[in-house]
Image 1: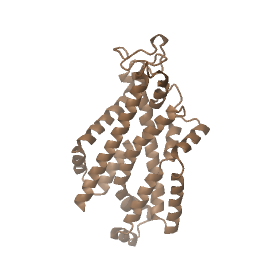
Image 2 (image 1 turned 90 degrees about the horizontal axis):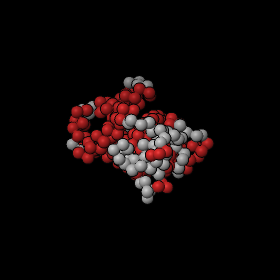
Image 3 (image 1 turned 180 degrees about the vertical axis):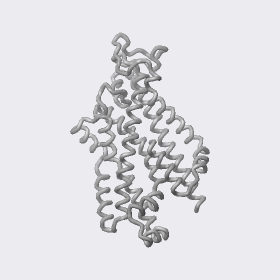
Length: 296
């Protein structure tokens, strides 16, 4: 997600949009601003996890198993007596870490593939897009289940798997914008002056796709957290004892009636993170749409 904000700033600068104007429009979205603040707090908690928790998430205390939320354990304990609060905070590290790496890789792969397709001759472009259509026709979860079953994933490997199965939408966006901008007069002028293809893409074509790409990346980040949590819930995500929100929900499924807090708090964290990411993406989209309507 941080990579997305870097791209957003670069896109505003490169497209002659004032960052201050964009920021004012986004700040005018109260819901988006609150969602962004929530994300900042959650990511700060993940980074500062060692300072926020007094108990290591893997510390076992059999005598304290399934304790209800209290002053000593704000979110209670699980079946091994592990502190749920510490595991939720450290689980944020895993979820946001996988999310950031996966989105960055998906943006990189999608941008490269989409740019090459958009600048290529029509027949090559058609072949590349049919390849993307073929990949999109396969259920993503099935591909991920196959991949993680063959190669037990760590955090980095899991992020790569999710990125490899999720870059196609980015490629479509970049390809569409590159194709659209190729017909503009300033592009013809750049080609006439002998501008090389890599420079043409970097300086004249790709900057116009950054706004849409950032929106897609931010919205995709919420999907990545859901996918990672789903795989962890199925036991195919991060290996224990690494805390994972999806894994925690799975661990507490057998005690929902007596120890609801084991599953409820990580499930709530997943919900808040995904909703906040989607609202931030909507806020960025609305701000860019306002820019486009004013320029039109």
